[in-house]
Length: 252
Image (cartoon, rainbow, N blue to C red; front, side, top):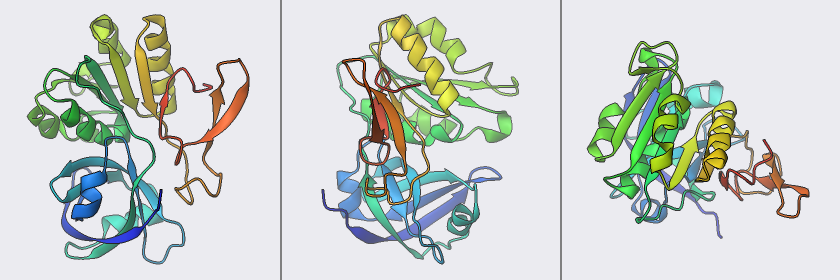
């Protein structure tokens, strides 16, 4: 694959919470080839390394990115004004393959929620989404998920919104009705979901988070342990071989 950096016009910016921002970037060529679960690598003014951000949604010629400010690079991105041009490499990585003939449960945790939106929209009506958040102040994209026609279940750790508990709590009640599970979020959450899926004999795919530098598999900085079928162990790269992996492959 050829990785081309392209300029994209920032047509809209919103602040969703105290630390989470919503950018909408216009580029028809990139939007046309972007799939659920892939990510973009954004050039930040004054920074050498680009910042990887998951694709939240695609609408016509608009690519939507929802991210959390975690350092100086993402802070600079959050301060970019509408009408500015942002250079990005997109789409990168292997995303979710979403069959139309299966009952799918999509699960997002925290900032792992945004990439589940495009995934759920692609699956269409009939899928179920379980999103988990720290508390009510962290809840995002509720109305966006409802528009997709999915069945939406929301949880919070402290019970201030939705179901009191973790995403695995409602999953226990409905997992037997699913054919496949797709999840993105913190590693402990993904590990627990993978274990539940294996116990119930369900196909499960997880989107992993790792710190990235190049974003294209050249620097080897985002390696993750993978189990081979013969019982041996190897490494793959989240940016190029993932970020989506079969959950049973991952060496948790």
